[in-house]
Image (cartoon, rainbow, N blue to C red; front, side, top):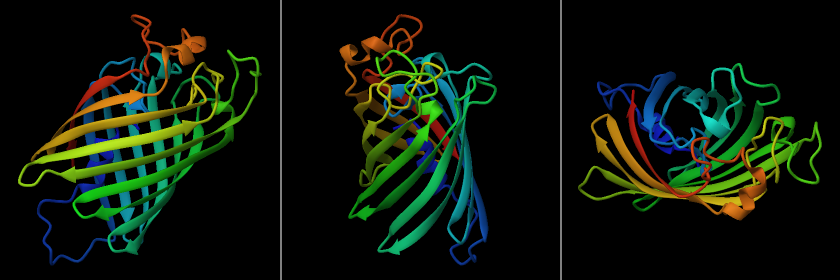
Length: 271
């Protein structure tokens, strides 16, 4: 899962400090966040060459449950396509309360890389179910990107061919719980990606080894509107499995894997 976890949580929790419980709900609300991370990990794989990234997002929500959001991060190394070396995600969806604190969230993310190489952008619908079990908050999600050229197998395997289109399935679960009488929240994530076993038209792919798992375990410390986070991130992608993807699937400085274990730090704030 991306290091967006903290930013997404902040987007959902951000409320004006001056609001009163008696105030009627506004038909439209705007929330956002900004974060500095030591490494931008997307589904366990570094998109910033294992270096720092600045990220930010803005969400506009309607009382009906409909929402639209934009999120962006700088990129480096394997995750870039030239241009501005930026990922820009446009998101639209609808949240439906199910009772007992559960929420169904259905939407679509459009991944964009402004000014980059052609055939890079792709769409990915998703469904998320969230709720609480005692002191534990939980979320289960399914994201399925239908066959598109950006996800195709264009190089480095016998089955590769120019113009190929592949799909991608991502399943994940997140849990978090607050430590009583402290500003600390513990968090964990487990994901599974199944898609292109090779490389896409620009030498990258959402699921670069076909099928793999990623996981995260960490903690957040809330200091007013600022959250300090630390997480251990890893994947099941071995060096042998990614060897045929080299030199694309590696750190440009030393050639090391960008899917190995890493401790990621974050500093984020909501507004």
